[in-house]
Amino acid sequence: MMRRSTIVVSGLVLLGMSFRSPAGAAEAVSARPYSGGFFDRSTLTGDWGGSRNDLAAKGITFDANLTQIEQGVVSGGKNGSWEYGGRGDLTANLDTQKLGLWPGGFLTVELEGDWNESVNGKTGALNPANTNQLFPLLIDNNVALPNLSFAQFLSHYFGVFAGKLQTVSTGDKNEFAHGKGDAQFFNVAFNINPVTLVVPYSTLGAGMILLPTADPDQAIVNFSVLSATGKASTTGFDDLNAAIFAGEGRVRTGFFGLTGHQLVGGLYSNREYTSIDQRLGSVIENRALAKKDGTWAVYYNFDQFLYETDKRAGKGVGLFGRFGASEGNPNPEQYFYSIGVGGKGMIPSRDFDRFGIGYFYASVNNPTLQLPFVVKSFLRDEWGFEAFYNVALTPWMLLTPDVQVIGPSQKREVTGLLAREYIATATVLGARVQLIF
Image: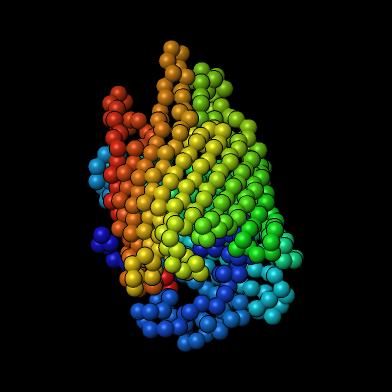
């Protein structure tokens, strides 16, 4: 599938810390097995002559990856052409205690960029089929700094964080269905609860972290205040006119002696949004689209192993599910549901292979345009199915074939002044190659 030449992108990043926990920060700066044979080590570039392991022991890590995806809408949808694109990350983490400064401090910096195109505008769906190509900005060919943040733990039970925060990598975390589309599922619906997408991907913010048991692996609670207008390409200080208040809690469970997690969260925004429902007469009279003040969302997810072979490495197979509810305006996805099965290392000698199968359904608040004698609607409920298998050719080279079948929310496509074409169920095939440097 990856028929085009590999494009080398220097300087890209993934910092993941909107609601960063000490677990995430500590994991990011912990020593890693960089050493080893070419086909066995964890990264393509290895231990840099031993200096990489030495830096990690002192609390400094640099990690990079490059993810390339080729996808095509092979039937249905709006356009059947194949598209190729990619994204790269460069992440730097610093642990002040390991560096010999003071305990409990974690600095994270992320540089990120993407290039070329995706099929996201060609399926007719609200939920993009290629999460990887959404970042750092919705338009292609960008390099940005989505994360420059610092967390400080004041005790074993309490910490604070602030900075320019990247809100995707750690919020709404799930063992089998989570991330930026570079390691597990491709579709946004299985990586991020869509009802939360009013939160900017990268924005200024601050918050607190609570550890009820002093063990972040057991339970963690986060509260944050975020700018509602942030972008990965700007500092955000020039547009601080609205806020999002968010909270999230995650607890580890041990049903039947197997690992699982339960997560609940919610958010409220006081930003003024453009309403998805419009009256043509009002638009003409006022020469502006109708607005609405504020919005909210609540969400839940769970993951539960059904069979577990290695708890520390997360090997086994289990269930996952999500539910979300929003006001339905400005985000038209009013209710969201997903369910699926995921697993890792289920084939002997294939410790790093992953797989996932999932189904989602989004109940859409259909936007309307109210004309003098008729009301025009544009959307319908959306559903989708996805299956992938992540083949670890080496620990640092991962090949993932993927198939999606999507019942898109968009009903018809306007192809001319009067011509309208019905948008049928879309079948999307794709392949992903990730290199971990």
